[in-house]
Length: 219
Image 1 (cartoon, one colour):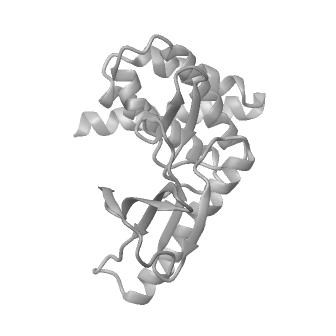
Image 2 (tube, rainbow, N blue to C red):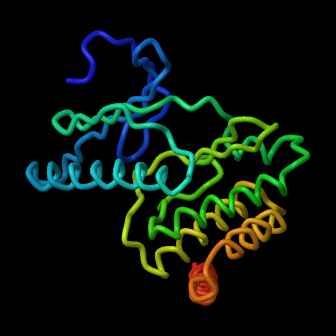
């Protein structure tokens, strides 16, 4: 058990987990609790949950070592399927881009560089959206990548292209008319890749985009 009598405030719930705001050593913290899927066999569910939690923590930690700002993981409870981590004070890019921010292009440049750091160590986030990137300060443009629940290591070129496509879809659906912002992200991202990796990812991204357009046409 990580907690016994801590005050916890539910702040969000998704398909896989509940997110609580709590405290750790008198500091604000986040507790992520994965819950069981009743339709799965209990032993299979246990193995899958352990595997996903391990992957999440590992990718978060490796990303931080690669220079990506991520929440610090304080503790992991594999019995109760809980991860205790740093509470990051920041504003989601979703809100930043919808507001009157005057340095959106600079932020997009930083976002592209951040994703490149991640992909250069063969990690993909799996859910790259403007809700999962926090801006800590508008002055220094520090970005923090959160929620590695769908992340994976040993990522292929296809995985990286899909990661970028997910972000492109997030821009187009959440921030209509923002293609120029996404283009800035891509330009910054590709500038930080090796020539070989850049060519491979761009080629594969175009293929993923074409598949996406075909699916939209079919409905």
